[in-house]
Length: 158
Image (tube, rainbow, N blue to C red; front, side):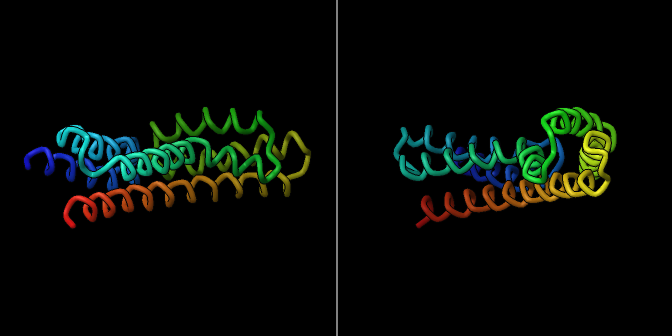
């Protein structure tokens, strides 16, 4: 039972971490699932749940890291914008936190695209797409970690 409580704690921290800066929410949630699965000699919560949580978690984890860049590309941004935005985003996150990261990435994509295309409107469009992508990936992270927590509780307690 002790490892069950540790697993649930990891899942709860994963949900909180999905919206907290620099806390890997999905990996923490999956660690809770794997810990409990291992502690039951791979009996509970069952292979189907573990596999599903892993696939969905991996997709959400990838979306978190590539969501802003993919959205910016969908908005017409170049690969150069994505690279510059990634560098600016990491620095801004470390210096100013998540809000600074969002502003930094949006501003970097806008600036690079406005200069590259000589069109401020295109730069703004690409910057807005990047911001929306980053916010959407945060929502996805939260929903996935919350769903894994609820699903884990459902399959282990019912």
